[in-house]
Length: 102
Image (cartoon, rainbow, N blue to C red; front, side, top):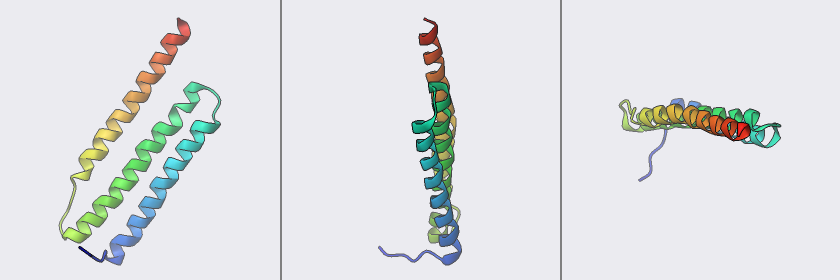
């Protein structure tokens, strides 16, 4: 199935995809370059949250343009990732703190 994406949806979707990739790249770079574990844990969490949000927003935009109706089921994916990513980083930081004291 071949479908042409309208230009009004393709350009913002391309910008969102590039931004999502940039956030993921910055998160990976921060993971490599920062000094301590506590500093390193923030960069991938923010990169994953913001990068995923941008990619899912681009997906929602293109799917809505092709279906000619609002498509928002990707918002549930974004919600779950935006809720679980900070919680998992918090649990990792608490485990590291417990191990360091211990």
